[in-house]
Image 1 (cartoon, one colour):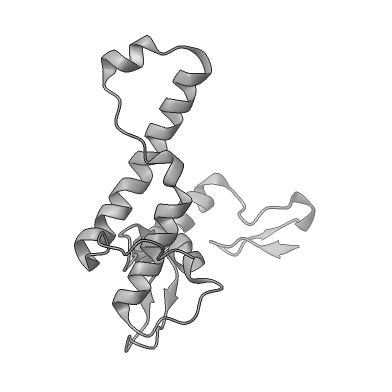
Image 2 (spheres, helix red, strand yellow):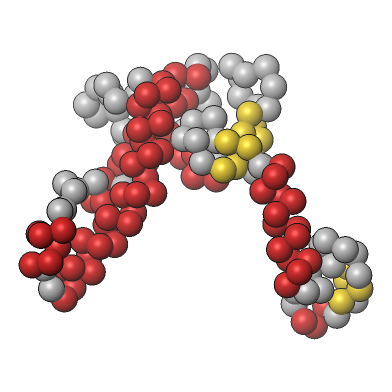
Length: 149
């Protein structure tokens, strides 16, 4: 037996669940969303808080931005941290940053090419606001060539 993560009602371990009902699941995650903050670097919802050398208190950093810093030398400044994250995201989503297609051009596509372009466009809707947030907030758009190692 284990306790429900929301109401602490006892549930069977063999059911391999954290919640006793869908209602508890939804209530738990709605509460979590209210406690979430905005990622300091890209502006998306974040549950994680990290203390950097240059920050006096914990700041919200999303999973992907904190992952971008994994394995790098600890950045000593806020701007360097933002540039590392920007370069990582730009490199990771490089193939998705294709020119926008208008409706007439999309109508002419068929089959797998249409699916690929549609998938790329949906990924762009996810990543472009994040890159734009980094560019405008930290002025990361002016990276020197070869910054990403």
